[in-house]
Each structure stands twice: as C-alpha cells, then as structure tokens.
Length: 486
Ligand SMILES: NC(=O)c1ccc[n+]([C@@H]2O[C@H](COP(=O)([O-])OP(=O)(O)OC[C@H]3O[C@@H](n4cnc5c(N)ncnc54)[C@H](O)[C@@H]3O)[C@@H](O)[C@H]2O)c1
Ligand SMILES: O=S(=O)(O)c1ccc(CO)cc1
Image 1: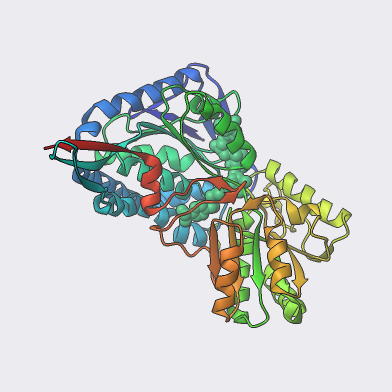
Image 2: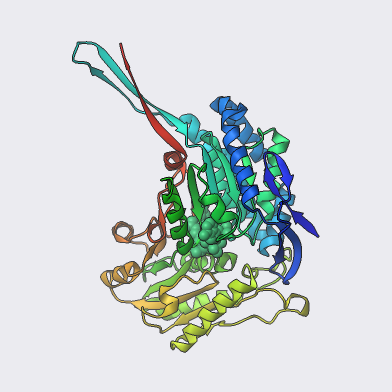
C-alpha cells in the first residue's frame, strides 16, 4: 500500500496528529494508499518554509538561472513520464490514451511555457520633464508576490496544478500546494522531481487534506500567504474569497461552468460530431470546459441527436490501459451518487432519455468502481435542473433552436460563463455571436484548443481573473514603479 506524505522544505513528512485518510482507485473502489492529513502544524511549517525560501538562494538567483531550473523540472517530468502516468491513472481511473496525450505532457509543458513569457515580457517606461528643468525616468519592475497557495481539483490533477505552479515559480514566488484529497499522487511525486533537479528547499511544498477545518482552510486563511490561486467549485471559491479578505490577499479563481455548444445547420457535420463527442464525454465529462448544453439549429436537430447517440453508445468503459477503453469512471462514489442523482432528476422532470441514464454493466471485478453511462437527454425546458446546474459527468441535453437571437438568449441565461463552442461555416456569424456570448473562452469549430499564451478564465460565476501568458504575470507578480530624477 502506498503512503502519501506531505512535502515540506524539501522533505517528505508525516504529521503530528497521526490522522490519515484513504486514497481510492475509482476503477474498482479499492484503497490503494494512505494519505497523511496536514493539520495546522504542517501547514504552518510549509508556509514558513516557503517564506524562508524567498529570502534564500531562490530569492537571489537570476531569471536565467530560474528558467534553467524550471526547464530541468519539465525534463525530469518527461524522463519519469511513466511514473507520472501510473500515478495519475491510479488516482483518477482515466484512460491511459487520454492521460498520456494531455495530462502528463501538459504537466511538463506548463513549466516551459512561462520561462519564455517571463524572459520576453517587458515593463513600461516613461520619460518626463521635471518642474526644475531636469529629467525623470519612470520604469516598472515586476517583483514576486511571495508565498502562493495553490488549491487544486481532481479532474486534471497534474495539468491544473502545474498550470499555476509553473508561472508562480517562473515569477520567483514560492508555493504551498493543496492537491485534491481525491488525487494526492502526482503533486507528491513532483516533490521528488524538485529535489532531483536541485530546486532550493521550501520553494515547492505540498500539504494534503480536505477543505473546511483541514489543510485547505488552514492554508487559505494563513496570514503569511500572499496570494491564493484556486481551481474548483464556485461555492468553494466563494469560501476562499472570504478567507482571503482577511489580510486583503489577492485571489485568482477558476470555477464551475455550464458550457453550451451552438450548432448551426451549415456546420461541417463530421467535425461537429467528432468535437462534441470529446467535449461532452472526454474524461467522463469531468472537464470544466466540457459541454453540457447543446443547442442545434432545427433542420439538423434529429440528425445531430442520432449521431451523438451512436458515439455515446460506442464509448466503451473499461480499465485505463486496455486499448479499446474510451471512458473511465467518475472520480469517486460520492461524485457518482451526485451525477446519478442528477440523471434521476432529468427523468423526474420529464426528459426523453436518448441514451444512458444509469450505471453500465461492468465485469464483476470492476463493479465496485464509480461508473456512469454516457447520457443524452432531449425535451427538457431551459429551467430543468440538468439544463441549469453543473453536473460534471458524461452527459448533455440537446435542444433545437430557430434563430441566432433565440440561441444567444438561451446560452447567456445561466449564472456561469466559462466556455462555448460554436459550429458553423459562416465565420461572420460565428464571430458576431462570440462577441456577445458571456464567457471567458469561445471556440469556433473547435474545443479545448489551447494556446498557452492566451488568457484563460471565466466570466460571471465561473471565475475571477485570467491566467495564461502575460496574464499569469499579472497575478503572480506585483508591478513596482521606480522613478529616477537626473
Ligand atoms: N474553471 C476552471 O478552470 C476549472 C477547472 C477544473 C475544475 N473546475 C471546477 O472544479 C469542480 C470540481 O473539482 P472539485 O470537486 O475538486 O472542487 P472543490 O471545490 O470541491 O475542491 C477543490 C479544492 O478545494 C479544496 N477545498 C474545498 N473546500 C475548501 C475550503 N473551504 N477552503 C480551502 N480549500 C477548500 C478541496 O480540498 C480541493 O483541493 C467543478 O465545479 C469544476 O467545474 C473548474
Ligand atoms: O488552460 S489549460 O491549462 O489548458 C486548462 C485546461 C482545462 C481546464 C479545466 O479543466 C483548465 C485549464
């Protein structure tokens, strides 16, 4: 049985309380590890180590030396690719084909991309005449914020954690990471990588545990934390924002969504169906950018429903390393219950169940896993629970529309505003809509296509702030103005 320890000041440590909790494999429900929960003493030690590291070697090295270390981190993740893959898959049950193409390579890339950003981003400068006829030059310098708390979810554990740790370290900060209690493995393993490349002690720290009354709350309310970056549910983000208000710490929040896709009759049908199959069902629907509402122009409504039904039914659930596995379980029994509860509410509210709606029939040895069927509904009003609430499962509701104005109103009538995908050959119309849809990210004839130099984040209750490229520098540094008179 594996043991997951906290990683503090370059060392793996247990805890003073002796409290441990289980790491469960969602494929079969078996306990695969024990996690040492960090209490206040461990969180205090991690924050103190991170604070001290700012004053040590890490705080003194040049950007070029920092970049070399981050490049080495990326290299070491790639060298230990299989270890990261096994760790991520054991925690999440996701297909190896998916994790080896997205989660692990992006885990490494997140350390490299921000090296370029930090090296190539200039600060402004201005010249002016002073009243006594001399000259004054003002220029900006970016300084690290300090100790950054990084609070992470379970859906893309390594990818989403490094998406924040990469830029935070590139900017010269130190971090204390609180991975999801469901997925402790890759954040823990990254500690070994940091030591292997010679990262100074205390720069990267990990504390395990839950949210309220546990490591998450202790960390986000810690007075020596200088900024908090969070990905997860909107309700949690709201609690973290309250904690951050004490001490007036800045927050960057990436939160929930109820993303729509808009399909016009003139779309490239094959591209649309291929893309919707991914956006609705990939990672068992547990992608914050995933589509849960599909609006289809009436002339092709039936055709889209039939094609997507066929694709949903071809998504074979199974073991992560089996070649024909197309979908894994959802993360936990608790999440399975939530998703199945929402499947039931769709039925109770009068949905037509096009496909799915329950638990797939799995072989005996996998019956203890948290499996759910890819599911499609039609026929619900816009007020139905599964049309308004985030499910975070492999499912979507499909409804017809007759005009651009109508579909725009429906897409925007939601408290979330993370992402939308529009499918049409009419690029003018697509752009017109993209400018009016209230989201942080809008794809046209694509989904989850990312250029990491671009801003990522949500509108409305999906988030506060943007990360990616120079936008990450806005959060992870403070801009200081220096004025010199001569
Ligand atoms: N917008 C995005 O980029 C994005 C990306 C991925 C996931 N998500 C969202 O994440 C959710 C799924 O992830 P989840 O279930 O892990 O989210 P969650 O909010 O339950 O947990 C996220 C993290 O917050 C911690 N936490 C919980 N309560 C806390 C508290 N009071 N104080 C401090 N920390 C606390 C958890 O332990 C975990 O590490 C979905 O809503 C999804 O949309 C958003
Ligand atoms: O910007 S990305 O790092 O690519 C990214 C991908 C997915 C999500 C949501 O699950 C967040 C950020």
